[in-house]
Amino acid sequence: MKAIIIEDEELSAHRLQKMVEQHTAVEIKSIFYSVNSALKWLKENECPDLFFLDIQLGDGTGFDLLDSLESYPQVIFTTAFDKYVLEVFKYNSVDYLLKPIKSDELVQAIEKIKKVRGHNDLDSMIGSLKSSFKSPFKKKFLVKIGLKYQSIPVDEIAYFYSESSTTFIKTRSGESTIADHSLDEIQKMVDPDQFFRINRHMIVCDEQITSIDSYFNNRLILSLNPTYSEYVIVSREKVRGFKDWLDR
Image (tube, rainbow, N blue to C red; front, top):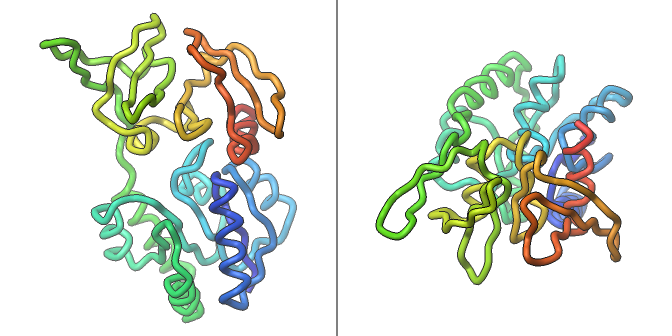
């Protein structure tokens, strides 16, 4: 079997590739870090037998990729979502791997997809999964300021950042407030067309990026509006996905 990996975390993608090559007979043809880059390749190359497909990508979702294709092969979703969401996968009989991926679970998933399964059945299962999984992105974040609560529309947010284990919201007007969610949680709540996780400590809005410059060690440095107190660095493993996100 031939496969491709679509995963926006470079380290996770290469870890999965190494695991596949060590424990299965599947050949990894290529790795992609965004929906856009995978679509470009698929338009010019023969479709492989299998996708290892992350759900939440920097420039969209795994479902966006499948929706853009006339047909697709077997799919094993890779996800870091919680057990509640995973029940939806089980209910729809779609294969998935929970991050961090374990070698024995990878082998079991490969064995499952070797069983003959009609393409129409696969379309039906993924369609059902998508309708069950997909939910609207947050439009507002409720925050507490002193003794009062305030609702901040997402359209007024410039970026999210974390400092000393605390997550903050920076509004376009320059105000900072503490958020009740971690960056990992927020990343799943906001529209990936509008926001991108550039490193472990920051999620930025595309409209608030004022400049992009090269930085040492193959990274990028951004200027934001409002400005941030420290250097805003796109981590090396995020650079490819970030560029594709801006070039969509």
